[in-house]
Image (tube, rainbow, N blue to C red; front, top):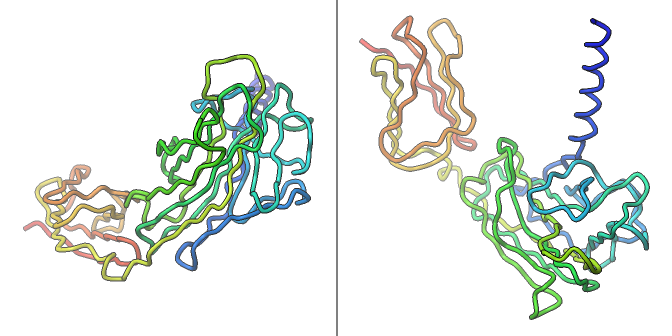
Length: 302
């Protein structure tokens, strides 16, 4: 019985590794400079990626947007048959799906860029999508994003469809919401997926190029929460704020035990309440952080 449990556990571990093995690229620090992707050599070594980018695949042929991605593209970028990701030099990257996957590969896919947005605001993304070779089935390239705390990617509805009758290429521009500011890791995902209803015919080759991520630098004073007041009311910590913002909160009792912690606490303008466990004492220490700014306050209920 014990042996069976161990075998089952090992099988489960290998299943997880097989199904959740995408590379998360090292985040590009936007505070240092803007991000730019403009080319990818077709002779780039297998298993390498553009700066702060990873390329993901799925086992599902003609995967739709809601289908999961589960592995990395690790083959060369100059293949000419089956499903593949090609480098097209100064035209960037091209996703190609067919009815067959290459050996040790799967079906496409996505280009995922990781960015660090600490001290950044007004983050704008600009990029170009294009059709390299048209196809009879409709495929799309869409920008999604998520933080490391989000379970799923969030849609932007910035979609390039292969059935677009107006042009073989299209330029896009999108401003990320303020909730993405001051994050150590944000993933931007350009997802290539089947968006049509026809089950027959060739699949289009769609490309992405000229990715530019531009930001403004946050002043230190911008990070400072405005007019925050803290007080205890029975088993609650009250935080009164003059503005809506995201903060980090940690609360300790007088023995140094942490009784509450939230990395991304939504603070609304007005009064906000944090419920605590039954108070064994009337003395608490509260640490509030927003970006690089932080303050500490000791609260005592008399």
